[in-house]
Image 1 (cartoon, rainbow, N blue to C red):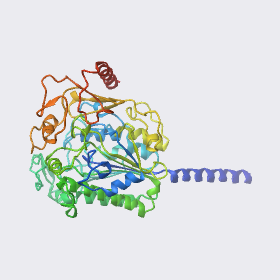
Image 2: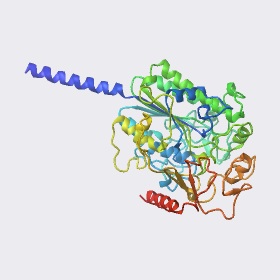
Image 3: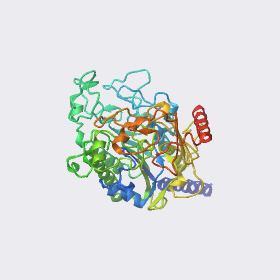
Image 4: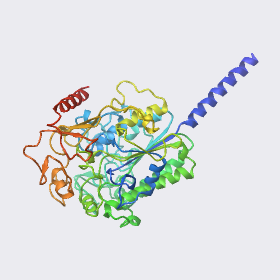
Length: 508
């Protein structure tokens, strides 16, 4: 009996030790999802008017992808795709950004990367910009009450950040379920002017006001620093267990409000200054990982929610010689490459090859399946239906392309795009994004903007779509990554194939 008891205790000890070892071998995961960083906004991707040494260091120590895309060229839908592994175009309400009265865009019982990691034993947090709504559908949220459901109902154990975006009220912080600093005798009130009017690229300021104590805690030039400080604090507090941190910066979304030490630090105006502040934020996070001895045990992913926007800040940067999206055609919100092809860097010491560049086609929608592979979870039917496991790509293993197609959402549903190999098909004329038509307009974009940028496209003359232009678009991105020539009429069989592929995918 005594020997049997000894063997049982020994078996339990071995099992516990094996479990502890398995837990310790789980790498930490950090996803830094920058806001509006375009393909040409980093020196690692060719920028010369701004310098991003910390992000460049990630590229030197990891693998950089040159054909990575956001699931949408629009902020909220892109974030939905990243968190759920599902194309946002499957949801009729997910074509544009979600504002302060929008309910939670993700179903409570939906699999997310946060829920996946939590169930795998990770501590989970989101720090930064949420922008996916709060509360139940069919109800207008009361900002003075618990903001439920929200991130905590989707697998995140901690949330601190900006609830909507830094150009749209309320200009407050939210921690877990509550607006930080809100007091009962000074509530947030709909249809009352906001107190925050310092910068001219803030909009809809009359939608909600009040809450002066809460607003006072939100200082525009300190938002980046505040989010950085919370991220570092959370990492230090949770370093003894495997953790998953989703750090969603407000940099570099307008208004461009970098901390004082970054003002005039770049050669690309406030737009470039905000990029260099972002690089500092990334550097502070990686320095913390080094100091805490976590760098070698952390998978760090840096990317952006969509391409760069040609707002007034972007226009000033362009005049200074900084091309937000490199040589790619198009801007944020649009179906052209500049709207959704984004930087994507993976640093994973000992696993991701250092200094490598990869042309593997991937999307932020692929993060769910890739992290499921990481933690050994088999996705069930309906979980991350559009997510593809990119673990081999992360490890630099070359071979047959992992993805055979990719659907990308612009702002206008008519311009839904699909990639297949070297081809991209766009379902209508033009960019399908912002409608600004002249320099100085905040939403300057599309055909009109090419008259200023000097970019060429066979469907455009003098900043307008030609009257005899094809009804839709087809580009060979292998031969023509700048999308100068619409091949719709030259390859009708490819058009038919891709159009049918898109219709089939969206009907599944």
